[in-house]
Length: 125
Image (cartoon, rainbow, N blue to C red; front, side):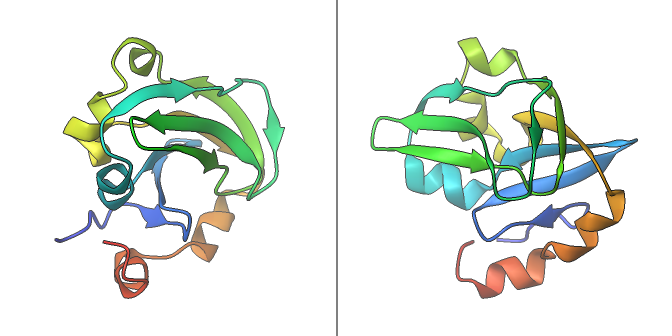
């Protein structure tokens, strides 16, 4: 599978896509595939100031629950409210469905994340 090249990736299976002065964050197709049918996405708190690696929210499926992590230091500025009623949007199109937006403290921190080739080398895709 070919990963989108317009974003970066984390070892914890989040994707990060710059959009203006914020980053959109979602989970990869491989992550949603491993989780199975999602039944809940949430516990994301706009206004929360997080460090890279801090828990930003949670996704729950019929199989398991998994934390979603902040990919960079910054402030969560939005949660994708559509996921409250339709968490399966991620199952349908993981790379088109963002979970939260984060305003990074330093936009250059995205350069520390993996590109698609590095993420695929993890054996995650």
